[in-house]
Length: 486
Image (cartoon, rainbow, N blue to C red):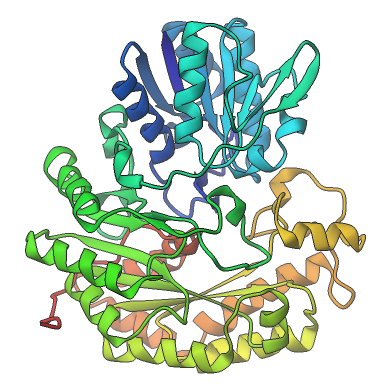
């Protein structure tokens, strides 16, 4: 059986990150589709499958290019990765599959397809949607398709049977992540994924899944609320394979919550140090799951930058968004980075319930007061399946718009009582201009022009790290490590 793993092109000038719960513009670089590569590894373990992976996103494939690839491979099953802002291109790719090879089964994965599964299957181009965490469901689906067409026993899928759209019961989330194979990076052209700041190859590592936090804007349903982690030895063995087999030394830890368990963080960092891995990496953290000891070990193990979900200066908005943090926790976390070589990136979001012009301006002022290394501003996006989307819909605030507007760089699909969508977009621009237009930031950029990294870092870093906590991107230029804790 021939299986094609397709990361669809957008068929526009914009390329997108669409990995796990991360979705948004690739600014400036795309991520490797490691979820598709993980399904490829599942196929390899099962045996009896001829597998090919095409990253149309990274290769900027046109329709004619994709048609040619589909004619060449003649797949029996095609898995397509999807995300909300580029869903039009993803669906068009499924249509092309059907136009070229009608008998092929098209299977969509991703947060958008999961949240809108019945609507997606209602299109003539999509046969099956895998809801939520895809690897186990993909394995069971492939086994069922190989022996026949009866999908009734495959949990976690939505499909059409006898003219009726059927949603089978949910599949359980994977408990022991160590039991599952790493992404098969032999299927990828790893030269396509380069950190623009270092010129080195990078890849995405998913060391844990699930997040017990309840943030209203997050598509946390995809990996569930239970935090599940791989062993440190298993993660570092994958890192070693990336270095020795694929020449990858820059990494994005794309965990829903990387720093959740202090002991696990230190164990992982100690394992990296003990094995002498000379790597750089970036990750995300809640402001209440970072402390000096964790940060010291992370720095020693090669961490270059941590993104912090700050979101708002208003404690009322933070409470309404179910962030579970306050200003004191934010300030305490950011202060830790002033004593470390690890850089801090703060994320600020406009448009959460309760936002007004006054609260938005207060958030910008708060960002200016914090001793962050970098800041990123964006609009809250009501992705399908999130509590934010339900709140805006129930209150009649969402406006008709195509999915491409569900992009945090230009989202204007809803109006709040005190702010229009266009005003929210202007606030994003205002945040960037005020934060990066300060004399201190300009002087820093000029001073960096005389460092080995040079001015290029400051020109590129903002764009590179906008994706970090959607979740991260690349890794900053490698610096000398100081001694870590003993």
